[in-house]
Every structure is written in structure tokens, then in C-alpha cells.
Image 1 (cartoon, rainbow, N blue to C red):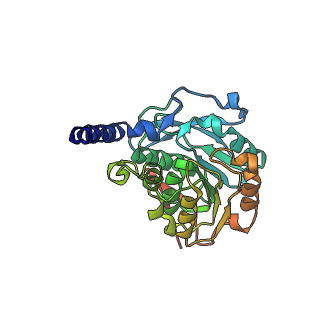
Image 2: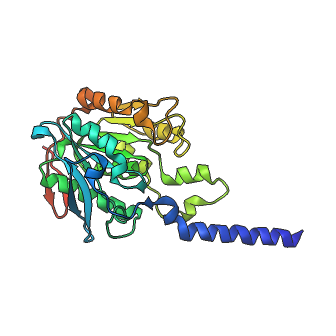
Length: 287
């Protein structure tokens, strides 16, 4: 019996070692090849480059707002695929007159580098710095994070002035997601990329819209509800019963987004001022 326990213990340790060494491949699932906006029904979008603080030039997809009268939505994708998989959202927003920037990540869609939490945060800052250069910040900026991208969007919403924050399938932290999925593994000790949105949520001052399907098996809706409970700002939540992780658009998510952006919730707080670029980042200038 002792030898069986020893073998099981060795297998468990080997499994932990594999997860530790391979966790980036489990978390980040990029499409490596380049893709074109025109191939995804976004011929009016152009590929622009956002320069990161560590020297990368990342391809992003951008279309300015019609007449620059409406806000621009900076969309931070989830962990898989490429910008074209967000084309349905980008098309609907652009057709409604909003500007759209689909942020590029290192290691994704032909971009150099390898993804990590630190790296993707730098990529997010670079995308918003690009928008500052286009005259988009503060009351002209809306941030939309989806899934893993919510772990980028929440801290950026604390760093930057913005009109509104949209969170699609958010979580308290990636550690919490992993702990629910692998309860027999000490994931909190092993995870190098915790994406801890819970640590920042109370500091978000812009209005928030949360979209989360109650049938989501990838990120349990309870984690999104726990994140909402930490908010100190106005939160509008939409949680369709049949919605899963990647099909919220089919359940009417865009109608919720457009209503949110067009109503009082999407209007900025009067203390939010425009931002200026300084030292590779944008600073909130307050009265």
C-alpha cells in the first residue's frame, strides 16, 4: 500500500510541475498569424500600431467615431484567438457611430513577444496611449473588457479617466477561477498571472455595465457577482439565464450596451477631465 501512495504522490508532484511550467499555454491561447480587418467585415477599420513601454509595436484595429461626436470604445479581448473574432461587436458599435479600437496583445495575431499579465497590462496602456494621441480620453473613452480582458480593463479604469466601463464575463481574480476549476491544486501559490480585479474594483469611479451569462461554465457567474459587490460606483448588470461564455451577442448583449452608452449611465462624471500624454502614459488631470 505504501508503494502505491508513493507512486500517487510522485504523479501528483509531476502534475503540479507540469502545470507550473505550462501555465502560460493554459492561460493564453493566441492565434499567431496576422489577420486583416477587411477579411472580417471591417474594411473601414485600419491597422494601427501602439508602442509599448518595453519597445514593442503592436497591431491594433481602429476606426474613429463618426464626426468625433461619440465616445470611442477600447475593446480588450479575452485570452483566445485574434481581433477578427470580435468583429461582430466592432461592426455594431461602428455602425452606431462609436469609435472602436480593438487592442492588440503581444504574441497574438502577428505581434512580437510572449503574453503575460505584466505584458498585457503594458499592451493595454499602449492602446490607450494611442487613443490619447487621437484626442480620445476622459469623457470620450469607454473601456470594454471581455473575459480575461476584464482583468486588464478594471485596473486601467482606475488608472485612466473614462466615461464608462463595460465588463463581459468578469471575475474577481484568475486565481479564484482556477481554484474553482482545480480545487485539488494549490493554484494560488503556483499562478504567476493572478489578474486580480478584486483589488481594484472599489476604486473604479466611472459607471459600470456587467454582462454575464448565467450558463457560463468558463467563468462562473458567481465570480462576476462577487466583483460587482465590491463596486462603489453605479453598476448596471445584465445576466441572461441561457447566456454562456461566448454567445452573449446572440442573446441581445449589444442592445444592452447601446442602451447603456446612450443613457445616463454612459455619461461621464463632471470631475473627469481630458488626459494628456506624459512619459509614455496618460495622466488624469483633475481640477
